[in-house]
Length: 299
Ligand code: CP
Ligand code: NVA
Image (cartoon, rainbow, N blue to C red):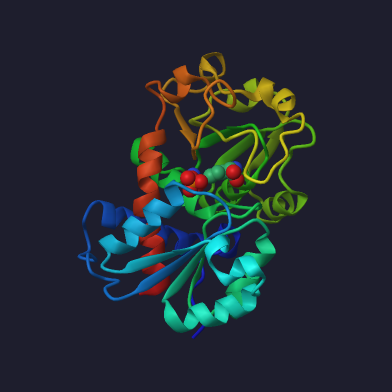
């Protein structure tokens, strides 16, 4: 049987993603008696980029389910000396029960999945960050009920996290308005996928128009891991989420940010540390959402 990979949201149907989210929510609420569901199982985590949340939440998540994790980085494994992703996948599959990878090129994730005989989980690439958006949707729904039909505004870089939000708009059926500067739009392939799914995704140039009446406002760092800062700060300054912009959203709108945040750049301190911010619940929900993903992949 083919392994159950968790690679990107656009490869799922809505019912399956709902099932994975529910597994996570049930674990958070301690329903379902899954406490030792992954006893004796091992997760390998390959990090080719830094991480705080993804690393710790996966490690804690698998241990709470009775399993254990091994962290691998290029510096202290043969990956850093050029052993191929395909061979790494073949070997790891003989030792562990699932592999999570954070890497730059999405093609490496695909290569790992093609050669692994155990599930592969996308812990972020330059193109997407699906685990993050599972936690984000969980957070939205805890605070405000079903995300279906909601209006979500993204302000900033059309980056990997934005791409996974676009996938989520197609799956969960909400309006997504992306206020992004010229030249930092989401990849055409992601927009084409959204169009093919008739997802309600719109690019805006004016952040005020994007945020007007929104239920949720999101941003992310202006310079992602591996990006050249270039003139991004100048380009993105008008898209900063500050109190003036937040005031255009619904009064009970929430603010989300995957973190790490740069106060005074993409978001001001009064917003991220203010009453509408849900970022600490969002960070916590990485743990619960990923426990759902681990269970779905490995059980
Ligand atoms: N949001 C997120 O993925 O954080 P880390 O880079 O710390 O894992
Ligand atoms: N867009 C950011 C997300 C970090 C979790 C990056 O790729 O660096």
